[in-house]
Length: 432
Image (cartoon, rainbow, N blue to C red; front, side):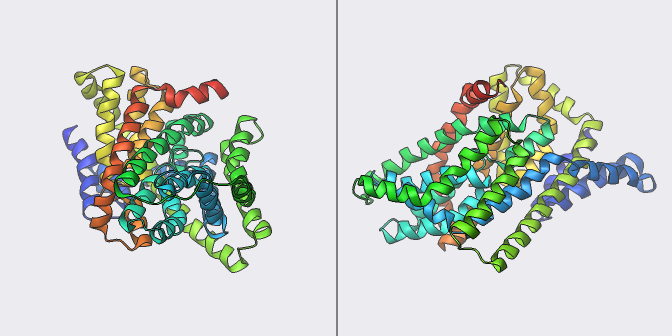
């Protein structure tokens, strides 16, 4: 068992550290386990093929390409700038107004894209430029943009929550609704930090808006603002499933970008579709290999061993959740979000069910942990995305983001200690 565990985890971590692409690292580790078990001549190629195909043969996974497509269409079709303008109009009068507008825009855009990196890359260009022009430090502007992008996968739609639901056999609708309140909590905590730095550094703010300005910006942003209402409302009313909501989001984004705002050309659409296909292929390649890896984990009874070791420390659900938080925060520093979810969910789900942790609550906690990982080196995808957009060196970016770990960790602790923060809304609206 010790050798098996060394291969499962030791080899995988070694391949990650040496720079192997995530899906290849997972696949090679799975192959090494099979070779150890059966020898070179006993590799069950039929089983490998079956498990890989089984991993992606899931209707729910269709949500991923459609949410990716919706986010890209909105980034390119002039929707993001209207959202940011509206956010700045309604909240820009506070000290550090554009910083608050940055966060509010991310909360609104979170209801459309489901991806932190899409948020960082799409809104980032507009937000960083606007804040720099108004006299904000470029590093601070980039830090607010990167930190606020982590809200994207918490508030629905959310690609990581869809991935977790698929891997853990948990209601996608319940998971998506469960992310709304924690996402708003994250935004509120970040706004407190922005307010503090705005007072300390004397950042500017705009005059209190006139009613005419508010109505004008609301009118311009009305159709994009309707997106979360359509998606969540459609799911709750049973008009379409969470997976079908992704297709509705794409269609709606296409109509807005092409027919309402007319800022997308046919050649732009083809490029967006091509980018979506490439990103979807990468994610599904990870899922396919992780399906084989997860099956081998369960077959080797690694999850049961994991549960036994955790139970030796404590059987208190809250203590175990904090242990998992520490573990996931470390994992998030080194592992890409989708890979972490597909690998760890089959391990953690039996533990959660054994001690009575609600799987919906665990999903929100898990994704929130991994979103913090997007802001931590060395992987830190949002750090790299915003540093590139803002033209800030990576080391300066890391230092600027550091204060925003505080509101994110406070949000994580509150969501962990008080499960009803994430479970109240699904219980109210879905009875789950």
